[in-house]
Image 1 (cartoon, rainbow, N blue to C red):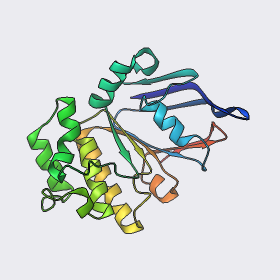
Image 2: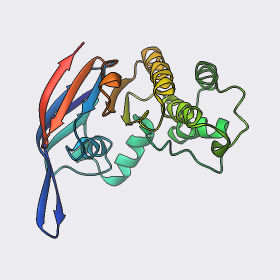
Image 3: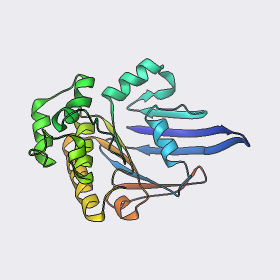
Image 4: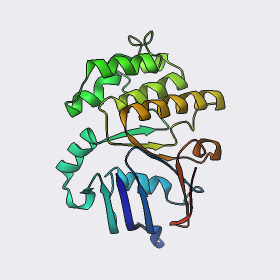
Length: 222
């Protein structure tokens, strides 16, 4: 599903180039899950943004489901993000002007993959049935993150990229949201790459990669 080979990324600063990634290699099989860990500044979020096609590598390649991101123009990348991947962030990023049922359907409708039966299943599994006519500001943090998970999975993407999706939640709510996410991933055959600082969260995923100083320092699986 995901192949990262020899990826380098630097950014210009007043003091000169800042090397963030310095030859990263990793892979993720179809239907599997991987925790991407590392200290602040190790390059985790930079790598996730590159894998989401939100930025470009300096050197190296990123391939997702056999498609190389560096060979796509901006229009193709935008369409690919709508149809092939799902994104979940720590800040939820729900659309404040839309009610919950429309937030849930938003990504799938953009992708032309809205499935009422799958939507109904997501609503039931995520426990959102009584919240559909509310707006995001009327929900708790845990409820908003469940909506964000449902929105990302509504189009049945091949790959879900999640950046600290439970980082703003208390431990009990974090465990609940993570369990729901993992259950839904099994049913949809979606692969998961999650940036997390939590060892406890990482232990729930099948594989782990640790970034240190822009390189893969450790990897493991359960």
